[in-house]
Image 1 (cartoon, rainbow over the protein chains, first blue to last red):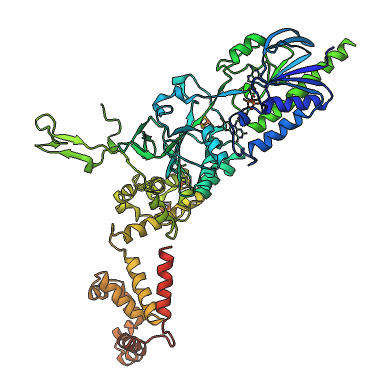
Image 2 (cartoon, each protein chain N blue to C red; image 1 turned 45 degrees about the vertical axis):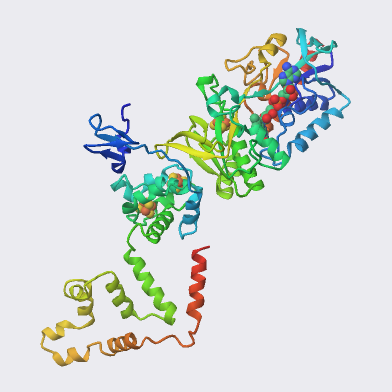
Length: 350
Length: 253
Ligand SMILES: Cc1cc2nc3c(=O)[nH]c(=O)nc-3n(C[C@H](O)[C@H](O)[C@H](O)COP(=O)(O)OP(=O)(O)OC[C@H]3O[C@@H](n4cnc5c(N)ncnc54)[C@H](O)[C@@H]3O)c2cc1C
Ligand code: SF4
Ligand code: SF4
Ligand code: SF4
């Protein structure tokens, strides 16, 4: 039987899986379509991660380094799987660079795609330079300067709009992206730290800073950094008569009044879409997708992280919105499952 | 468009007239009633800071609008316009005009602290009600309350002389709050008070000598003397001025 396991995608999930598999002495072929390893936190240049507070390039950098230095792991960047055949224990994958890989099992850590705010034109992204997304704010935080893209001024007032591209039937996105509340409350603190004169307002329908993120991010942001929380789902972002500031329009449901409030910078807390490659991934690997478009699970409890095809495992944000900590544990769990299933097959054959 | 929540219409937002000109357009004959929009057009971040600086307002920014305070509130049970949750929200966003609108109810808080005991974020809503009352008073939105007037007289004497003179405090307090002392003696608690200080039954029983012997004489005499000569605590010197400066500093952060 073939000793190699194919891992697709080198984000937190894939990196954790690859290292897990190698740690029990199996070989790994890691295929990543981009020219760098690390997934979204590296590709989109995130600043400090929640909840550890470590810089993404350090934290995820360590995961990348650990994988790149491992003799048992062969890494292919700028590469995809174009053709895939065989069955559990005996798969054959053709890569876009023309090489063929023989593998006994496959781990999909193919992740998510950021919601593209262009799909909510009423919130001004793409129309007004000073409407940005949380990924852009992450990049500003890395650069150490919060500024309005239009003219570089430091914003007096920032509005963060939650649930952009999530929880919205209008655009067919009926899921909660799980991490954006925490990321937004954290960014509000980081903005205040960099620019103490800036006031940050968060417009919310619910605040979902789950588990231990509650006091560490939501409470702290409100109580120690003065972040204001306004219960309103914004209807529209337009430009103020001065041609400079933005007007955020909506209904404040707690005072039951319409609001039209001026802001310097408007931030979309963008959600996590299914990986835009998923239709292709489903076709190439022969796995099913669930109705939102994320990769489907086989069974939850006795066959965790199974896809709908035996011998192919899936975890992390390929399954649905997840935070990095969860992705890392999914990666390890998949390593356990992939190797464990192969061992069981070998025992049975013997 | 139908009006879904009539309760949201403020009487002072309703324009009603025989002749009505709106933004230069004469609409008389078509409509005689218009409701002005009630859009919130800005926040005032300074307002929250002011309330936080007043005693009781320190934790107002912690509120997450769960409504536990309002739900447990003694006054809300009687009058649903008494809504601590709402005022706290308006404070945090700086919607001062909403607070001013409710100036005649906010003071009704009975300090039962049920809200304080039910608040999951430890906002101490009762304290916020106090802070809001003080702000309303300080800004002249409501007349200065009797208890504040008492405090003011008390403090004034302390600062001036390092001591207070009870009868002078009461006298000035009655004068400032417009209380008719004669009426108060005749019909009010002051009459009862004076009567209890003197042993009236003795008088009724014709025991005049005993009655006079028990009359409180030195006390009132001393009080009168002090009211006239206003003695200061020995060595008070500039202490009052220093205290006054300190108080001002505390007040204005
Ligand atoms: C603005 C923002 C901030 C965030 N901040 C935090 C935070 O501070 N803390 C936290 O815990 N989480 C955070 N998250 C969530 C975090 O980004 C995800 O949990 C994490 O990136 C998911 O890891 P993953 O490996 O499953 O997927 P990804 O990070 O998406 O990695 C998937 C990898 O697979 C590759 N890939 C995709 N398709 C293919 C294919 N067909 N073939 C080959 N390779 C492929 C991709 O190029 C990518 O490298 C944030 C999310 C957003 C949107
Ligand atoms: S985590 Fe918060 S911002 Fe993100 S979709 Fe869920 S509720 Fe909305
Ligand atoms: S202290 Fe005041 S606000 Fe609080 S419950 Fe009692 S009456 Fe209501
Ligand atoms: S109980 Fe506390 S947190 Fe809840 S609305 Fe009242 S003040 Fe705010």
